[in-house]
Image (cartoon, rainbow, N blue to C red; front, side, top):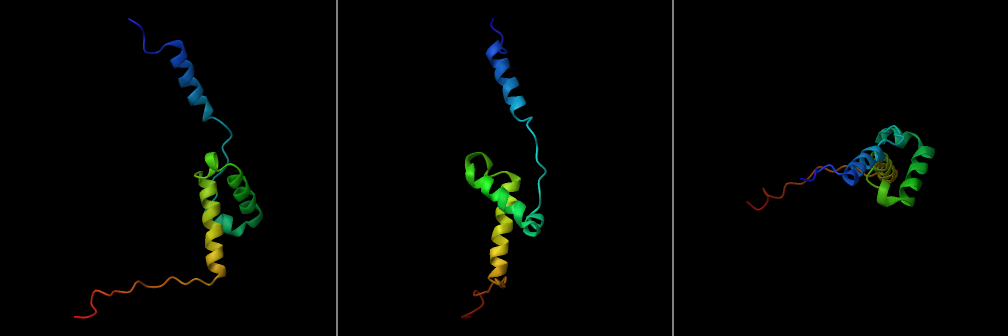
Amino acid sequence: MKSLLTTPAVLMIVTATLSGCGKQEPVQTVDWYKANAPERLKVLERCKANPGELALTPNCVNAKTAANALVLENREYKQREPMNFSSQGK
């Protein structure tokens, strides 16, 4: 009876495990990216250059969220209270 852990299977498992052992960069918060424009711009460029691998990484998401928040702040966007229309017309 053939073992489930054949040599190719073991190599695939080891390769998949080691591929996640690369250099880990620290994850920065949205507020940090809002306060550090040069770093935010570098991360956004890197994310834009390789969206398939980086678009959903925490730093790309946080940098993009910070950029979007700054745009809204510059437009003086104000959070509005939701209106309740269900009580009208009664």
